[in-house]
Image (tube, rainbow, N blue to C red):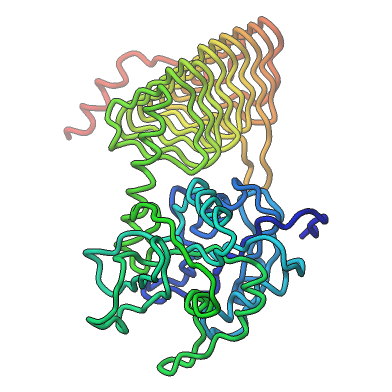
Length: 450
């Protein structure tokens, strides 16, 4: 990973991602479970990049050394060999950042994937509004949720004195019903107090939440910023993971509707984290968008389509179509029912209307592909390309065995298996000659009756 260039260290981020998440009952570590097609950890990295952080450190377990983010950015990886608490995790992250006493450090949890750049920026505004502020806690309303800690009030309005674990709250504590979901700490304060945190007498681990108490006892102000529970919820169980996915999808649907996309039945459409849809696109019910989808204005996506890694112009797709990665559908093209397209270009005005597989192909403008056509792109060892020119007509139930080229204006007879190139404006026909034997059917039936 490329080292960061020297610059003002106003904002640095440490993401805690070394937990197992055993309650999910999965061989996949918790932070690598996906929401909207993107791992929870990568969601947090994505939010971090959008606030122009100078440095990002991700603290992982050593066995995750090969982890690479789907989000294109520079970040440092640190490894915590043994779980000793969140403060210990922060130490590993701090050690791989540039040494400085300037600026602020966000401490974020990788299992809170829907955290927004807006909240992160608001935390910094609060931090910089008062020169005596040392910590800003990111918090959400924890009422109605069991086993969540709370913030303890301090003397000054809007300040807190510590974060209390749920099991340690007593009737005498003056608390705010808010739960910790991350924090922003002044860098010099973190450098000074992090190594003064004592192990918990109950667990022997050291917790970063103690930084609030220590900062308060050293005369600093500790404040908080409240965001919504939907934004700051985590996932420790499969049910909670499903709830996060639901929240994410609802957010994406609203975003599309607000941007001028027509969703006929919004609750039945599912998006990836990076789905890009321009205004005046119509999406019918029961459509699933995977990663890497871009849809241009004017397109119409019919019911029961699955689209991933594809670019769609002002075209009509579906119903019951599948577009796989590498597919590019041009303006005025038509992809119909039970058609699968993979790694192929479909030209302007081209039609692939029924029961067809197009793989590793290029189809020219205004070409018509008949029902049941297959581009045979794989010989069991390698993939090969089919090139079909402009204004070509491919008859139904044809098999085009790649590598093969059908030039402009050619016509392929229905039922043909094409293994050789077909020149411009030619007829390609490759099928057995039809023979009709008069009376054969009648005599055959009679023989079976004996």
